[in-house]
Image 1 (cartoon, rainbow, N blue to C red):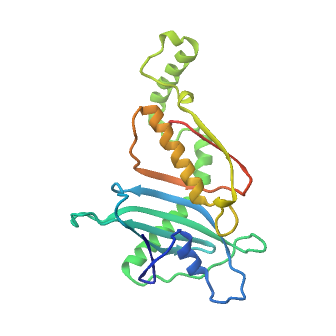
Image 2 (tube, rainbow, N blue to C red):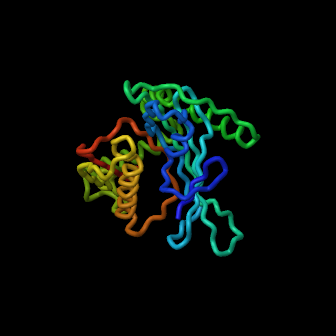
Image 3 (cartoon, one colour):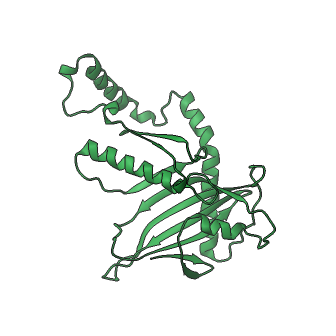
Length: 257
């Protein structure tokens, strides 16, 4: 069973992160065309403790920050164990959506958000900071490339040593360290045709399905590299750069970094 929190009331439902966004953007007018809500990014999905398959999950979601057209939703997954003593919070994640006009496809304004409690104000301020980081990311990446592609100058010496070791693998493999593996030898790939049953509310391929494919490939890559079952800890960041449609040929590539 999965429970969804809306206005302080838990409701049993098939849960997706876009439900709180749909509620927030609704104008309660049945004659108005609904907005097109696009998943822009997923921030820092952290698994705080293992989830059990024999115990109910409670998923609570709320809009914590809005910009002009951007909406951030915070999701918390809780699962009570038998001891009742440990913190039931199992997973946290922040989703960012962009509201678009369903006719033009261009971004459009959304309802304002007025935080009232100290906790709501804190969440709003944190969302504001994350938005600034997202907007500043392209400039930061540009400066990184202009500086030779290295943002951590203290690691350049170590990188040069690893590069020299990699050259030995290519030029004189018999002399290479047998305890090292080249990055290209850790690569895995997967391809598929996107099917209609993988669509979301708006007819596009569901972002959660794409994230699941990415997770499975990452899990398999780690498994093949280590030789034993890996344990998932967190997803750092996910950016949805363009939509995926039914019938698209989708290719996934992974490697150990």
